[in-house]
Amino acid sequence: DARVTQTPRHKVTEMGQEVTMRCQPILGHNTVFWYRQTMMQGLELLAYFRNRAPLDDSGMPKDRFSAEMPDATLATLKIQPSEPRDSAVYFCASGLDRMRQPQHFGDGTRLSIL
Amino acid sequence: DQQVKQNSPSLSVQEGRISILNCDYTNSMFDYFLWYKKYPAEGPTFLISISSIKDKNEDGRFTVFLNKSAKHLSLHIVPSQPGDSAVYFCAASDRGSYIPTFGRGTSLIVHP
Image 1 (cartoon, rainbow over the protein chains, first blue to last red):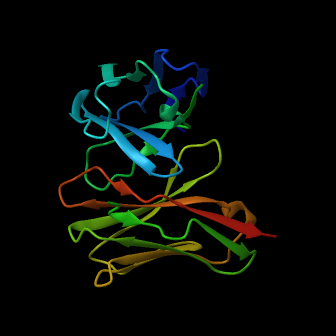
Image 2: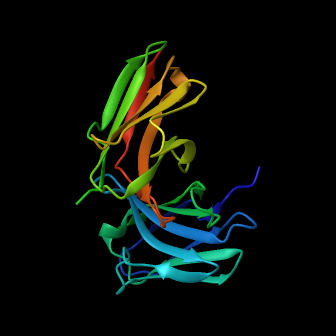
């Protein structure tokens, strides 16, 4: 059963440090999403890629966050410098850009910034 | 402003009874709705969906009802089982968009 793989599963670091989260989408999927889950906001969309091109990153704080897809098998989300308010669970999801196809989520990276 | 609202953060139900999870939306352009289920320490998984051309979609114990005039949908689980205990997210998308908007989720606890 194909799955979206996210690494690391957990990350604890001090504020000011760079954080890199990685995602391997399901083979053959051409859309990738990054979400952040917080108690207050639920699932917030941070970035959206189609065929490796960034199409929507309006939900992402541009000054410290960046998202890339170096190749079709890897998506990255970086925070530099990290702040305590970035503590959350970050999910990656992949899918096909055919209409109405549900997304497949990874199990998330739980990030704690001290 | 939240376009998809799940106003009940939590719901507790006895095993064997019906669970009803509610979702309201404000964007009249939404025409496709999904429910995802999330266990602790796992990502959300797709559960069931409904298009705006229908008012009901059923899959085993799970049924989603859509009331377009009220901009309201609900997920019914009958009978509820302890394994259904999870967070349920409602999501909606509009014509031409592949990107769903998610609600904040409702935590369902089914007691044995």
